[in-house]
Length: 153
Image 1 (cartoon, rainbow, N blue to C red):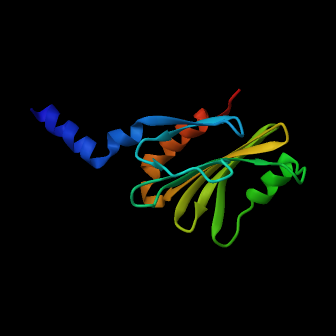
Image 2: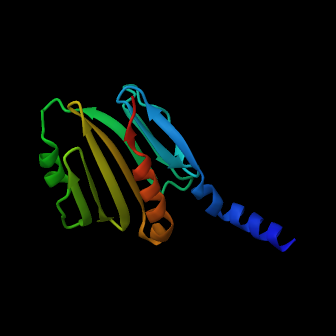
């Protein structure tokens, strides 16, 4: 009986739901990504470049989308621009590789984690933001999402 009550408490708090991952693929920009089941996928935009996912209270937001590199911008140029800190944004982690980069930090009392893939003159971006108060929960979830974010065939 005690185990049943504990399970119901966990289900009610959303702890188990956050550990369950769903899968989204975008055929236009050829990428796939997992996302937590406690985030609701929003309707596709008209250009079908990706999706937005939100928590019920709107405090957690995830974007997964593709874009063309019509300006022929180099990945390193985009990395430098997006990994700089400002008065409202403090970058605390950054990683650059020849075909992707990752940046994370704090912006307006929210944690942000962004991964950008580069392939065939196009970008594929994953970005999640969540309150600093939910850092313990979403840091590990963000790592799982990032690991799942891949080019698809």
